[in-house]
Amino acid sequence: MKYQKKQKAIILLADGTIFYGKAVGNKQGTAFGEVCFNTGMTGYQEIFTDPSYFGQLMVTTNAHIGNYGVNNEEVESDSVKIAGLICKNFSYDYSRPAADGSLESFLDENKLFAISDVDTRALVSYIRDNGAMNAVISTDVDNIEGLKKQLAEVPDMVGLELASKVSTKEPYYFGDENATYKVAALDIGIKKNILRNIASRDAYIKVFPYNAKFEDLEAFKPDGYFLSNGPGDPEPLVEAQALAKEIIKRDLPLFGICLGHQVIALANGVSTYKMHHGHRGINHPIKNLLTGKGEITSQNHGFAVNREEAEAHPDLKVTHIHLNDHTVAGLAMKNKNCFSVQYHPEASPGPHDSSYLFDQFIENIKK
Ligand SMILES: NC(=O)CC[C@H](N)C(=O)O
Image (cartoon, rainbow, N blue to C red):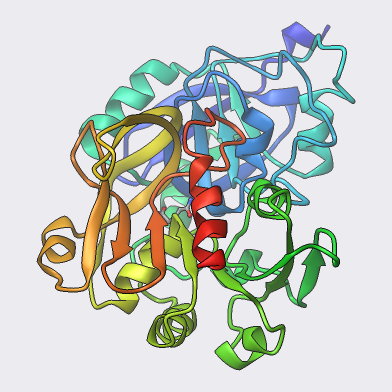
């Protein structure tokens, strides 16, 4: 019987704290990564396939995961990108007319190790108090000392360059080649729904690898440039920062999302820092300082842009702030055609309050 699978598993945090669970599907396994949590009540498939989560062990705070199965269309990249899954109740059964299969088989195909029956409320509270840190999930429960040694070898997220691990190797095209506008997008971990949102606004996109040069993008003769979301620390992304500088120098239309937003800040000499435990969920409130309106947003980031430096910068304007902790949620350059947001206007999962930002990008291209 499915429900009697009882292979014991542990979560060992870098500070030595241990939580207990059971291996999903009764499988043996071990997975390392930075432990973080997402509070979304839906959208697990989009979250698991979002390249921004590469290298992270995902704790889902919803009490049930898997209950509506998976759908082949609801992916944000071609594979599962999280390093491992930690949940409360894992549903082996699913119910939804649009489902193509079970989450269990989807995770199996992607060779993802997952554990369930974890006291995720206690674990999330622990991370909220003590910060995001590296961890290991494993069925090797009698080998704590060995796991501790291996865990100590896992690199810290600070300073870690991960975009190259998820970026496309070769350029590719997206959308209708007869569209009115052409956009060059840098893939430092791009989500599919960003491409869909840009393409649906009458744009044909060429997507470039993380280390592409300005000349490579310019050769496509784009009307606008886009810097994507993605995993890891933005600071080591020197090629992307150099590219952003070239685009900004020429005052070409530029839009950045999440990691792309952080790269634009760094290209302007504004620093980024690691947050205590980040923002990951689909109900994060932000305020648009240009309109005074609030937006409920989808977020997934562990780094942020230094607000004091951004506010003191002569060429930058903070356009959006996060209402929970007043961190920078959006930036624009005062005399350049360049803006960026720390959150995810493409949603998937999440609310569509901020999709106007894609319209704004197209308006900026038209100018
Ligand atoms: N979604 C993203 O692009 C995340 C950006 C970056 N890796 C961070 O954690 O802050």
